[in-house]
Amino acid sequence: MASSQLNIRTSDTLIDELDYLVNHGIFRNRTEAVNEGIRLIIRRYKTMKIAEKIDQIAKEKHGKGSLTKALSELREEEDT
Image 1 (cartoon, rainbow, N blue to C red):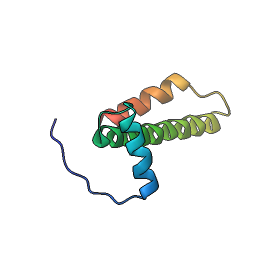
Image 2: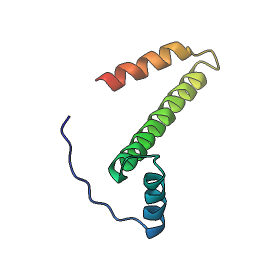
Image 3: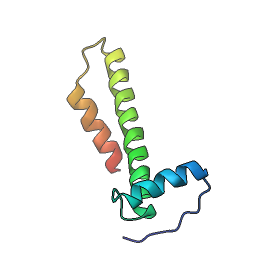
């Protein structure tokens, strides 16, 4: 997998917290820690979108929507 460099600015406090995690062996290095953080943000966003879709179906069907169908539709959308 190809990689790209991302330059960011953040507070000294966050850097200290990040270094603490690295120094205590939670992550091998800052890059690994930041990548995990990005993955968590993306996962949280996708989870929110799934919840919104479920709520939408529930409203449309007055609580009789198919959770399985909603999840299948979301999976298909993500695959495209």
